[in-house]
Length: 294
Ligand code: G1P
Image 1 (cartoon, protein in one colour):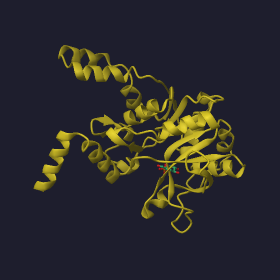
Image 2 (cartoon, rainbow, N blue to C red; image 1 turned 180 degrees about the horizontal axis):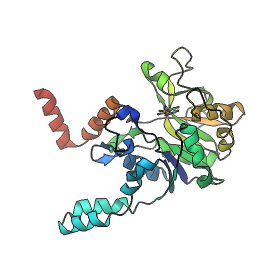
Image 3 (spheres, rainbow, N blue to C red; image 1 turned 60 degrees about the vertical axis):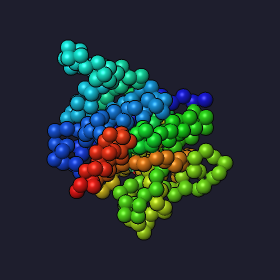
């Protein structure tokens, strides 16, 4: 059995789709309901059983690390004001059952490059990747079991894997699209035969897209480091997956359970807030009343 403990979370992107909101605030720190997006992501990693989080970050994003650090001043103020519930919540954030390290991505050279930046911290171990824009919502507002299932399967089979959702036709050209070979004997959907980054609808082999949860054997780095930058000068993760598969390495496909929101997109970000708010009975009735009045 091969243990997997480490997960890379690339957070260096500048969030240009969400400007001006993200001019001085990292997009990962925007709140969905009452928590910043990155907190949901870290909770998902912990729930899935990972022990070490590696943030690939940027100089303008120190508030992400600060969010999970102890804040003496804030805690003292809450204590003085006898805000016990809030104090407990704030204290819990710096006592999570996971270790956190960060490394900088000096240049904006794409997702594949961001993952390569974490190579030294991963060492010889397998690793997962979570893309923090993509917020999964299952029952009770948590991310559900998708990533946990991938981790448990990896520890048994030692096969890399990608989590796939179903894209609407209009969204196909925004994502990495997979072609799979269905196999009912394997856990998940089967093996991935091909992956194409952001194809036109015509060239897309299916509507199954990578939703931003991956697990890789350590030998994947070898393929990632050989990927040439594309025409936008980015090193694409999808290209490395395609080379990996072509070299007869197995990659399993898992099916996303629950809803997913691309929080780097304004409309999806608003929908995520509505979905999470509707799980709270008081907020639900307030939203319903508001919509009735307007
Ligand atoms: C990245 C990946 C893409 C994946 C997507 C999920 O694209 O390259 O394959 O489907 O994340 O959000 P980006 O959103 O960085 O353009």
